[in-house]
Length: 170
Image (tube, rainbow, N blue to C red; front, side, top):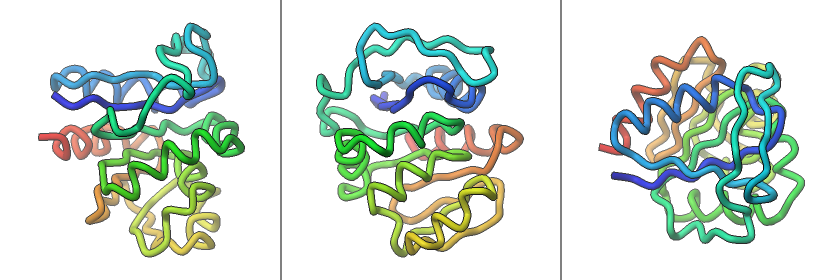
C-alpha cells in the first residue's frame, strides 16, 4: 500500500481529484489531502466535489509519502505561489518518487523548477509553460517519464491516467 499526498485547494477540477482518488483507494492505497489549513472544506470549480483538507502543508513531511497527486483546475495556480508547496513538490522530483499530474497540475511543477528534460503532457493552455520550463511536451492522453512523472491532459484522459498511476504503484 502506498501513501499518496494530494496537494489541493479550492477550485480544483472536481473529477481530476475524485476519479484518481477512487482508483487509488480501490487499489488499496491511502490518499491524504494537503492544503493550506487542516480541516478546511474546499469545493471544486464545478461544485460537484467538496473535500476536507486532512493535513496543513506545515504539518507534513514529503519523506512520509510514496507518491504525489496534483489535480488540475485553478488549484495548482494558487498553490504555486507558496514556497512550502514548491519545496514539498521538489522532494518528489529530486527523489524520483512518482508524481501524478493532470490538466493544469504541471503549473506547480513549472514553478518548482523540476521539469527540465522530463517528458510531460498537460492541457493545451499550459503546454507553452512546460516547454519554457525545459520539458518535452507531448499531446497524448498519458505520458510516462522514466523518472516516475505520469501526466494527462483533461478529464477525458482519466481512464488511461488512472490505469497508469495505479500500475505505477504496483
